[in-house]
Amino acid sequence: MDSTFGFNDLLEDADGYLISERVRGGQDIVTAVRNHYRGSGGLTRIGDFLTKRFRGLAGTVTDMARNMLTMSDDPTIALGRAKLIYGIAGYDTLLPEMLPADKLTEFCRGFADSLLARAGQEGLKKTTYLANQKKT
Image (cartoon, rainbow, N blue to C red; front, side, top):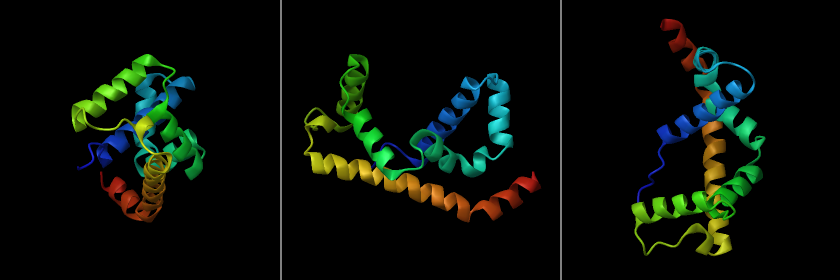
């Protein structure tokens, strides 16, 4: 099955998190959005997200992903997560908390590896990005 969480989803999540952090820090939403996209937000969004949300650590990403996929303290989140999974993959799909621990860890580690790789790619594309930004 193809992933339903594409690269654009990751970018939107990273931008949303980073902008919300600016607002929490006291900026109004218009200023936060403007500063995010005029500043380095488009250039370093995944790296900034990785650093600010997960302290830049693969282990933290893995642990937080596992927690979000399995936590049951909040029944609204648990029900929403089950509805999304069943709605996309069908009712015969195992929920994350039903997976063998090693398989769930492997999945979460894959997310961490992907996030780290994307952050690394940003650095490689920095020169091209800055040159394109100057053209506009």
